Amino acid sequence: MNDGSEPMPSRAQPRGQGRILVVRGGALGDFILTLPVLAALKRSFPDAHLEVLGYPKPASLALAAGLADAVRPLESRALAGFFAGQGALSPEWSAYFAGFHVVLSFLYDPDRLFRENVGRVSRAQYIAGPHRPNEGAASHATEQLMVPLQRFAIFDADPIPRLGMAGLPAAAGSGTRVAVHVGSGSETKNWPEPLWAELLATWVGSTDWRIVLVGGEAEVERVERLRRALPADRCEVHLNRPLPELARELAGCAFFVGHDSGISHLAAAAGTRGLVLWGPTNETVWRPLSDRFLTLRHAGGLPNLPVAVVDARVRECVGVA
Image (cartoon, rainbow, N blue to C red; front, side, top):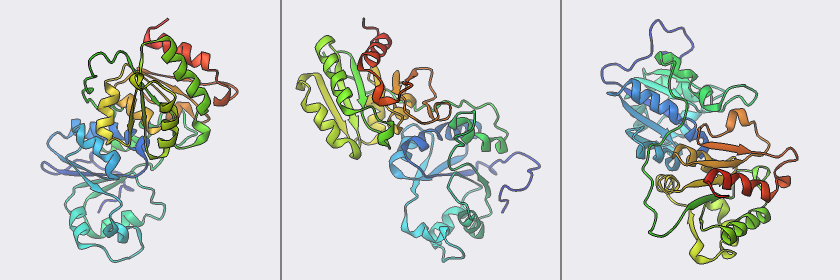
């Protein structure tokens, strides 16, 4: 097996119609940032069969968007042997890996155990990509994740994650729908909940907007507290929705406001206009890469970002004085 460490005399290309496997772990945002890789492979090899080995919830987006032909679960117990040195390898998974011509992996594999075990059962060309972008780099995460595409002679692919899903139709008379996600993977990235409550109350009192509260398991209590403070006819709640459904819901909203989170990347990839209240992470690397998204930060950190400043920026974007 060519493990990708040797110079290639010609571009990596699946034989015949070909079978390509992209292996991607990580959270929702990590997967969305890898969508341009899938899109470029689909566009460059339209007759190839492209599969994703990843976590089913985020990987379902690739299926729904037509960027993958099938998805397999990375957390399968039978895969455990592929992450151990000279362990027993599942016959089923061995046959699975043997069926591909190219394996492009973004897994964290510092000891090369996964790579070597795949090499024991498959003659596929193995190309290793970064499991995580370099936060000190001057380039965006998607651009860093796309570097392995050069092995396929793909140099000018679109780096913007795009799902291309039609938005779900809004209910008649629902007005301007503004989606809000009040969580993230870290409290340091979050605008304080009391400030969110004040902002939402301001909108209810001075606009006709319908507030769409979205979130996952980690935000249930926070979302419920905010919901209870709002009139029932002015808000709707979407918790723990399947990600393709949530993407369509967000695509049907006029605007989105959130933090540095996977849901913000989802909204951007869905084509929604939005604003991210930015915290301490490297904006150059991690911001949603979309010309429809803006970021807003405060020199004193998110706790010091005034409600009036956020309100004014959102109104400016939505087109309400």
